[in-house]
Amino acid sequence: MHTQSLHTARSDPPAAPARPDGNGLAARSLRAVWHPCTRLRPGGDRPPLAVVRGEGAWLFDDEGRRLFDATSSWWVNLFGHANPAINAALKDQLDTLEHVMLAGCTHGPAVELAERLSALTGGALGHAFYASDGASAVEIALKMSFHYWRNTGLPGKREFVCLRHGYHGETVGALAVTDVAVFRDAYDPLLMRAHVVMSPDARQAEPGESPRDVAQRALDRLEALLQQRAASIAALIVEPLVQCAAGMAMHHPVYLDGVRALCDRYRVHLIADEIAVGCGRTGTFFAWEQSRCNEAGDDAPLGAQQWPDFLCLSKGISGGYLPLSLVLTRSAIQQAFVADELSRSFLHSHSYTGNPLACRAAVATLDLFAQQDVLAMNQQRAQWLAEGLAGLAADARLCHVRQRGLIWAADLREPFAIETFAADFHRAALERGVLIRPIGNTLYVMPPYVFDAPLANWLGERLLAALDSVVAPAGPGKEARHAA
Ligand SMILES: Cc1ncc(COP(=O)(O)O)c(C=O)c1O
Image (cartoon, rainbow, N blue to C red; front, side, top):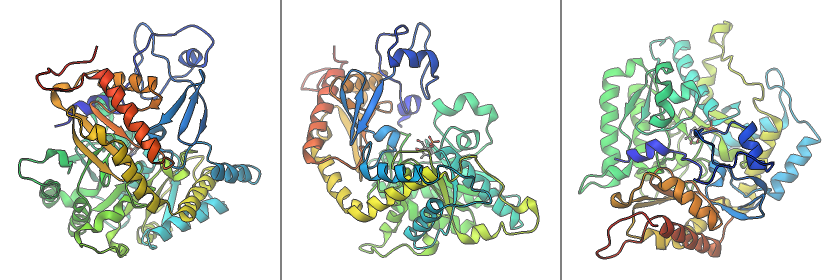
């Protein structure tokens, strides 16, 4: 399996000479900022890239270099940096209301955003609970699920099920349902126990097995657990279609329909974590909309019962501008919290819950979807991406080439896999004008929705050149080796 990805997910920054001294931004940052998801090494740290400006799909560093943001700044950016429409909305909001607490108060952007997202689910998920980061949305969904069962007389439903190699964030609750060793192992003694079930990752196909078969195998394993423990299980949490931090592990959409049916049959909540895959990334606004794949040719909207019980959104929902997350849920679930007793209320909060600036950025983001027929354009962009990266897709050094909407990924074939691939490739791509961070031996591209065919071709050429500089091209009679 793809265990190599588990050890370097959201992988290391590039190898480069340490620059502990000096007054440049990178050196000052090393002295003053504790960077996220970054190793501190004895003998000095590698300097971060000092970014001074962004425009469209491009970032500009303090040396005047222009870099293509090939992974949308940790999968958040949708419509480019410094997008004029989102900027204008934010400037207007700044002069109107920057923040007010959402307990006992409300404001236009929070209400409009909740209404519009509910409408996008056909009203199935009628209430939005706001937070700031993705992990806090996951915490909320887990707590709400448990609390719902408690409020409805089933306090014994307090266990959670998650997928092998799933990722849901770094806070203690979210980490408990995360199965990425490099992030969770150190904290394991602090974490509640969760059931980890087989991932539907299509790369696990045995000879003769289709991605659909792998999904069915994973569903069978899940059902075996539910048969035994459903009475104690509150919810199952899944990343629909793509387990991103696992190395862009993709599965057949039949899995989604299958987990919905199993959760109904065994009376377990279904939490869809669309923090990375929502907002048009996989081809539909919500990845979950593709769960109807069973019914060939049927593109009717999902019925209310076909939606998950909780749907977590973050990252792209604010256009990649501001920390914002939310949990959409059924009004029927919210109703279980209506009571005189305080203990039945959901008292969770964060100071910046539903921040007006963040919500306004999100409303402006939804406006762009509505005005520009983004989903249709993204089908075209997905095609450009596939064509631009066709040289990589055909390369003998890569395998498991896969794409879902605007996520393209491939793995280094086993003989070419190298421990330092992520860091080496990152550095080689930077030298060629592309900011990209492989996950272990998985090379992936997840660009903002603002590129055209020539730019996709340019990207493909640059990435191939970076690959050549890191892994010697395969050829007849050539041994796999690390490029000099
Ligand atoms: C699927 C998924 N869930 C949750 C998170 C956590 O979000 P955040 O980093 O904003 O806390 C991430 C972040 O990458 C994610 O990909």
